[in-house]
Image 1 (cartoon, each protein chain N blue to C red):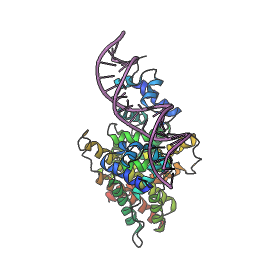
Image 2 (cartoon, chains in turn green, brown, red, orange):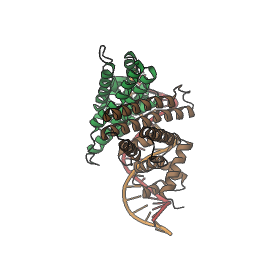
Image 3 (tube, each protein chain N blue to C red):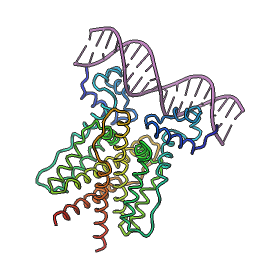
Image 4 (cartoon, rainbow over the protein chains, first blue to last red):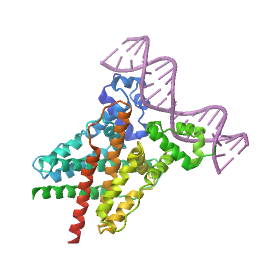
Amino acid sequence: MTNTRADILAAARGILAEHSLADLTMRRLATDLGVRPNALYWHFPNKQSMLAALAENILATIPGPAPDIDWATDVHRLATDMRAALLAVPDSAEVVSSAWASGLAERGMETTIVDVAVAGGLPPQVAAGLATAICQLTIGLTIEEQTRTQMERLGVTGPSGRLFTDEFEAALEVILDGARFRATSADT
Amino acid sequence: MTNTRADILAAARGILAEHSLADLTMRRLATDLGVRPNALYWHFPNKQSMLAALAENILATIPGPAPDIDWATDVHRLATDMRAALLAVPDSAEVVSSAWASGLAERGMETTIVDVAVAGGLPPQVAAGLATAICQLTIGLTIEEQTRTQMERLGVTGPSGRLFTDEFEAALEVILDGARFRATSADT
DNA sequence: ACCTGAACACCGTTCAAGT
DNA sequence: ACCTGAACACCGTTCAAGT
């Protein structure tokens, strides 16, 4: 009956998949693992750290930079992959948001975008602005989408009528156009 | 000893100002108002609704569109004002984030930005993308900044070394450049 | 109109102890 | 190395009743 960190994170994903972030309590997690609540504190110092590990776990599936493609195309792909990875696990955007804010989670996606943009010739400051804008957009909009999904799932509200994919694409294009504009104006 | 909704929101702001979002419980709020916890449920159906009202309250101070200025200048000003309004109340960005996600709060700032951009001649879809990108950036980055501030306040961590104002400006410029680029390319 | 009393069904976390 | 027993100090929310 001895669990590993990976077991715990898998069980946490299961709770998000079948229920919600509100149901992801240390007590419930322990019950699902067939263990007492305090047993989890051998593996993690507190709930916040567990959630930080979960955030990294959820984003770990995203493929890294693809060499030999246009930087803007690759950044667009990274943003889309990130959104897809979040949408695959209910309420995960909220988990990632607080994990990033807490400073306990690695933010590999942000540094990857910076790297790709800099390798593509963007000035570092523009690359940093681009990465910030894209990550905040992706997380923020996905929080709204997943919250909405959960409310519909619980039947407390009907469909929002919002087209989140379109909203995401529109905002992403605005951001990428801004970065492209800076790239070309820096060349001349 | 009878309280109004405004009294409750003022007390809630007081808790954020002197403590943190973690301390903003219905029980503590009630205690500060000299009332029993369940008394609050006469004014709000639940905590979520109280937080939605608080979110609107915090953003209500931001001046509306300024006529006769360049749309991009005004959008830049709106974003800066929004950030300032959030920074004035500790942990308020997190409150606004969940309030917007819950669908219980008005999102006047987003519609204001869309209006200003459309009045400035931007295509509606670009204006929508601009508003989404700017609001998500402002809220998301301010969540990180305020979380960091709270952790320093509690002494659990030292200064981050991040220059949030610079990060905000850099990302904001990228987004605005993208919108400007779309505006001019639509003209031609 | 606004509040209290009393209760229900939960939380995260700690500490000593077990195997 | 990993878990249990038992406890502490909390939560949000409901319902009937008071004034």
